[in-house]
Length: 507
Image 1 (cartoon, rainbow, N blue to C red):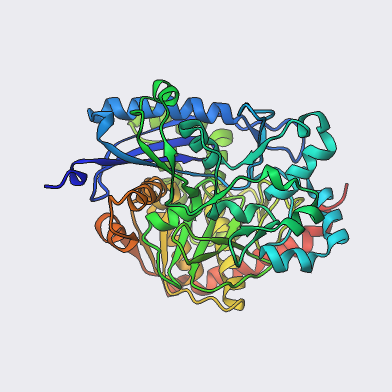
Image 2 (image 1 turned 180 degrees about the vertical axis):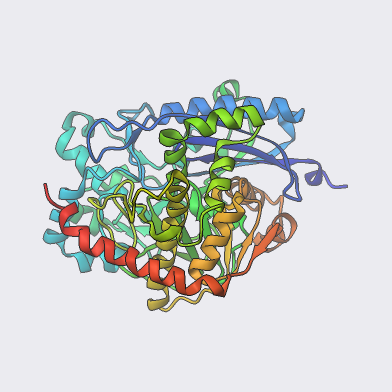
């Protein structure tokens, strides 16, 4: 047996509510895993911030826990891959110290800035280079917000990092920018995968703020002795650049060929369609896949699995007590309750726009809405309607992708929401597409680990890695008998936003 077959890969995922760390063998089996939570701060309406220092603390403690649970010598870890949430704007000074909390993907404070830049530079000119509309959720406007609202901080900025590149920096001391996260900045050329100096000048972003760009599987550096003391990894362990969480989840779901599609059921919902040619649409999101030579045409809603977490937090005290008594999870009990409600939720329709909305409506003032309530409705109706609303947002994004020329025959589901057989079946019924479920909870960390494996020769290539590690656990076929009912509610879903948009925008 070769030495590499005796070693392991570590995947780190910087999510919105927690980090996840998982240790994999060569066949993709999880040897040990763990998570570490951290808060989101909402200091003002439209703001959503996190402290990247808390990410690092959570990563360090979770790595130690995983190593302890695994019983594996840290020297047997062949390489580390890191993925993370999108559209951060992590400001570091020349000593590598954090200058402020970072606005995250839900933060829309830069809306007015983005509208102004679109007028001054031209929406079409920005889109022609970046392949994405300039909207407040992206990194671009957040950097300019620093400039205009925190000038003393702005003057001290040396580099702007993304979530995964910040953890890579803490591990290796190397400042980097992976290609898949470039889509967050509108001075990134989406055809060439490089920074554009002219657009930097037009936007008012300092070119020197931008780190060198790496392929996602490219080794960036090695764990430093200082980082090793903090996190428990062995000094000298290789670390690759890593990538966007959705893109790593797409890889971890086995989506590496054109027209394959991942369905995401994490904090945010959406889909990622694999393309081998540049194909941008202003209603959707375009980024590089973590697999070289490919793009991902994405749709993303702010209300994915996070909707169920919100319901659990705000409305499920009784279920929490019952779950503790039965030894079940609260989410499992909510799932069971929703399953007792008729498809279509007896006319209750939900808009999952819980932090404004991203694609395809791009409206920072969009609001979450329950429609169709009366005295006959129960909490369980709200839970099922929430599941169906997220499924409608997925269908909405898919239909826009179809209009843009994309072809989707099947969805590969990943993320915590894919653990729910009911929710996955609802998505199949609403979209009319069969859904395959892979390792739902570990697809994203597996994708990060695969990047590390390919980048260090642990795997020959991405094809070998996916064949060895990705397995379909179950499949859901759409139930055509429910199609007309869901079509009716989907039309209401679309009409609700169009009818309420003016009210949502009233100051």
